[in-house]
Image 1 (cartoon, rainbow, N blue to C red):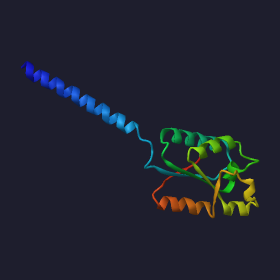
Image 2 (image 1 turned 30 degrees about the vertical axis):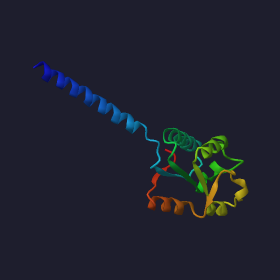
Image 3 (image 1 turned 90 degrees about the horizontal axis):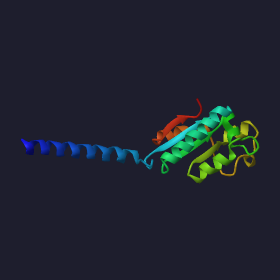
Image 4 (image 1 turned 180 degrees about the vertical axis):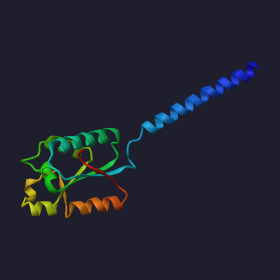
Length: 146
């Protein structure tokens, strides 16, 4: 009877150790298999702040994730040198691997020169088209803001 109880206790301890190991393995996800595209289309400072915070959280938790932010329509101010309230945050995020893309159609329709956009940002011909291409390629889509 004592050997049965000892075996049962040992089995319980081993089960607990295995479950703890499994949980810690899940918590160590660095994001290397995650591809995320954000779409920012409005000039609301609260939405831009929320986006910036979400990007910070993602890059801290998943440093190896691929992240792209496509900015178009009224959201273009987020990437403008003279209008963005998030220049230093955007530059820090770029250093962590986040890509920011400004829509050339938006620039053309709003008569904004590419030189007015932060140097760390890139360009795409059509913002909504870029979002579609990313989704078709398997990227997760997140609408920036609330």
